[in-house]
Amino acid sequence: MQYLVIAYDNDGALEKRLAVRDAHVEGAKKLMDEGKIINAGALIEDDKMVGSTLYVDFENDDEINEWLENEPYVQNGVWNMEEFQIVPVKLLPKNS
Image (cartoon, rainbow, N blue to C red; front, side, top):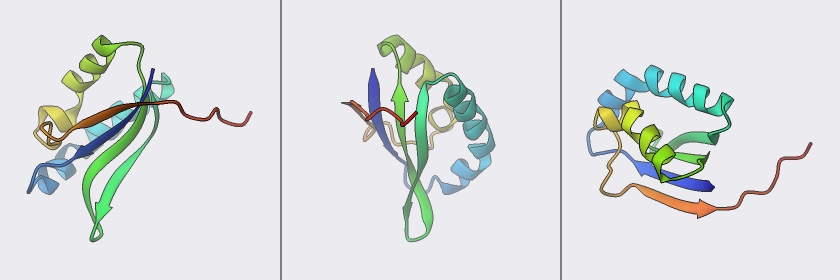
């Protein structure tokens, strides 16, 4: 099932974000290769990264939970999980 993920950072998390960004990007690229992350990018305010948005495709809640348990931005307190949003969506198919 496809979802839109909106994950704002905790206040003052920019240094943490930058410190673990390489691990986050590496994991995201792996999941993109597997088709689990469809697209992703940083949320920007005043020219600073303040969060993330992703389109993901996971089979079930267990896959989502496994991703979050291993996500460096979750493990290192970057994303504000109290305001974390995950919304079911149906994306248009890509042009072939």
